[in-house]
Length: 333
Ligand SMILES: NC(=O)c1ccc[n+]([C@@H]2O[C@H](COP(=O)([O-])OP(=O)(O)OC[C@H]3O[C@@H](n4cnc5c(N)ncnc54)[C@H](O)[C@@H]3O)[C@@H](O)[C@H]2O)c1
Image 1 (cartoon, rainbow, N blue to C red):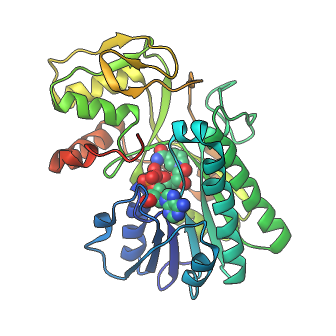
Image 2 (spheres, rainbow, N blue to C red; image 1 turned 45 degrees about the horizontal axis):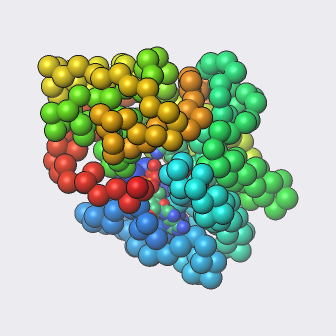
Image 3 (cartoon, rainbow, N blue to C red; image 1 turned 120 degrees about the vertical axis):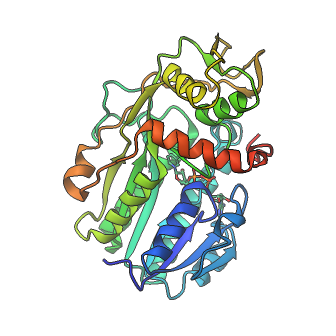
């Protein structure tokens, strides 16, 4: 289905990935309805965009959700509770937003005769890698409630395709990065620290490998998923070309901002913070390696990620430098 001239309902459209999608959809000639409760989203990210209407709403508000979707043809479901610690500390809240909220979106899509639903899943559905790169057929043993909820959302999408003929496609993203990224994960912490003259703090030996996918590559995958009519009910890994370990990330950030700073290695217990960096705790049940195999998306969608780690981090730093106060307030902690 072509995007031009369509009306797209975008949940989470004021968030990091959602705001980039909104821009791309508008550029491709679509009309966009952003539906977001602004719990973490930033409405200013959308302020210069034409053809956008913004509805402050919660995906748990079934009535408002259903009526707001009226007249739309495509749904891009990106609203979610992402904070792993919140999910662990309040699993019921996590379950409600990420599972019940997704079911509400699917039910509203059926009622509104939606022709395509794109669901933002996560590589977090796999848990600890038994091999890398991880294929879509890798065992599914999520480490955190977040991954359980994302997996449930994906399964419901597949079921709604089978039961009701609702065309859905799910994307298991790697670690998405780029301008508008929210503060709290390793790259953002390193950028913020190095920018303020502090050395990056690496947990453990820093050999943990991660799949970083630049946000414009994720946006491209979304366009391909919407425009392809033969992938209903499917799920795809959407990783990037940057497979880097935590030492590589620290070295890239210092190289681009302040090469005189050398990383500090520390080994706080899971759930505890480092004395060098009290602002953020180490995740419990941290993943060792997390690298996605994207050959299925390449084959079926023609997905072809392009942005190198150096280029992507350079762009994220440039954006951060334009207003460093953006990461002063972190609604997630
Ligand atoms: N960022 C990543 O690396 C990554 C990786 C894998 C999957 N994802 C998925 O991609 C999607 C977007 O993630 P993001 O990084 O842009 O996060 P984000 O927090 O920037 O965006 C989420 C948006 O959803 C909104 N929201 C949250 N709860 C809501 C609710 N109950 N009702 C309505 N709106 C609500 C927030 O205000 C925010 O604007 C999520 O579904 C996430 O699970 C992201």
